[in-house]
Length: 247
Image 1: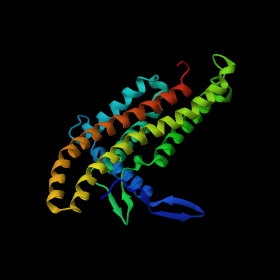
Image 2: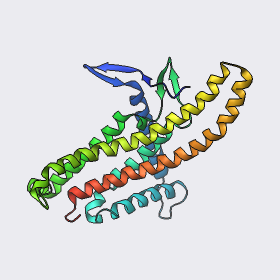
Image 3: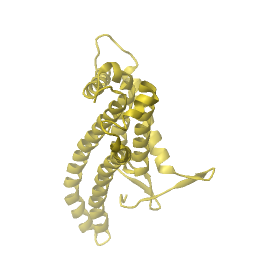
Image 4: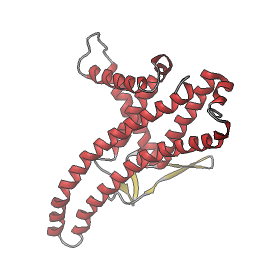
């Protein structure tokens, strides 16, 4: 299927328009993460083996991220959030790599994180959550002081920083995943368009495109992993800026 076509199916609900592809793909990603978590944690043992080792490695990895941004007494409450984000974003990044499915030129299967609506929604929720915990843990007065320290006239810049954090957190993830799928689409198009001329030419370009496609898919797995890590790391950084006493 052609990854370059961006038409999508939509549904209307109480005057709001929702993208059906996003609903399907985010639900599939959530179900995959749920199944992985339940499978790995079904039979917990004091001496972990196999699947439990994998889950404990993920937990320890996120613990390391939290400890690098704030003390554990403050950041321990965000462990579940970090593990969930890491697994969910990684799975979402991978869904569009093996194939893309389109019906009548409208995409029905792709990485949900290749849509800016999804990534900006995630970033907005994270930044909003950081403000919530800032008020909850420091009180309104302590939270407000963060906007006028070290100097009061920096207040406008602090507001701009919050907006910039939201945009960069979401668009960084979107840009990397979307660009990877576009390149895979270009490589796939090389072969499919050649078949319109001749079968022999189509076979030749399929073989030529196969190697760079496999290489780029491997690289995309690496990029998707790094982007999941960066998203979780920045989430903890933003949270620490709001809840930690010293930063």
